[in-house]
Image (cartoon, rainbow, N blue to C red; front, side, top):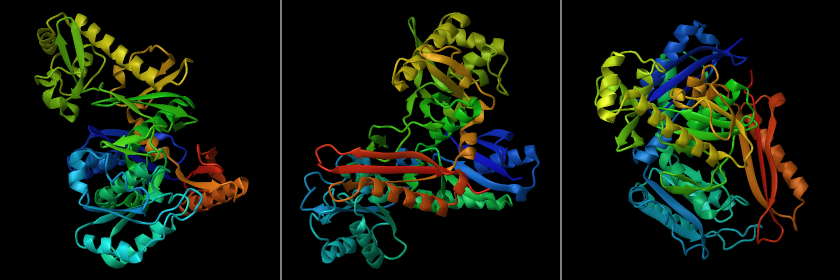
Length: 527
């Protein structure tokens, strides 16, 4: 018998669950997210341990889903000073590095951008050889100026050796402590989006280092010797070492955890999950208990990237969403009071009308410290300039409309499918939704995100491009499968639990004989 703790840090709340080895929830809590984040995590873990009363030494694993990296990028805070080298001259010079970055982010990150000769065609033919003197000249310019380096080569997903060689020279010139992001380990095939992902990854490595250190210290202070993992954006786990090397893969892990958790709590294999928080409702699609991956280039902090991301659509409906009335119309958000609900909402003596105010007044929601209902019902009537029930009706109509649009966006055909509600604001969702076969409100839905982190498996994926005129496609796919399986076992997966999530051969348009191979496996942690 052993136990696991799952923690999910959101913008408003830090949620935690303590579960048994067979995934039964024994304790759960929602704590307010603190400014330093660590104390919120500590409070949440302490609370579930207190409730469950299990021996510390039997808590084997702790999984953390966090928004640290997303917030750092969105807020442009604590980003590393970076350098970037693109290996590809004389090709690829027409579009400079970071061309499509927002101006403010380019100003912060774009001081040391270089292009050097090198790169490959899709089938491994050389564009031009790598020039050591040219590369080292660029590296010397960056010496003492940068904290991490992004290296991107044309078709390095096929042959990464030039990126790896530049990484070796970078260690020689810039010192062993320089953090390096090689694009072949992060993004997909497209050069510019892969380069963008590598640059963002390099920029976030300092944030990841602090996050991992704080997580370790928090767990250590609580006297726990558990193995620690971080949730990544495909619904699986990564080790702390991987999180430090590839922090960009933790972006969007929050919605992913909710999608996985809601699917497990409701035992629905395929459906739509809507996670209602304090600020937004995030909708995603469950396919075989895993989130559907986006086929679009993902935009992160205003930057286009092409690494795997969950297909998530957000609308501005949450517990703290601000409600406004103009003439006969009711407008919801898009702004929210977020974690300041108890300071700003009418129900707590504030002066901002929120969605939570309506549901508290209507006895559909209970939050400690709220005023007498009659008292703030009158205040709602004054602000809305109509009777409380008329105002409530308008609010519910707007919610219905927004949620039905969200479901419609996520569906790929006209068939009705189940919708699963989760998150602390799930009370806002209508009981019937156009296009949904049913709307499910599973037990423990308010901590689906923490449960999703807790039940997550570990995964490994790789993709490559081959020329089928030179290589046998079947043999190459089997070789790739074997490599990925070995990597997964090395990362701590139990051999008997390994599943194939994806095994694809996709011909590339306009490139005769070019086929992209992709393999993705997942497995349970060793018990």
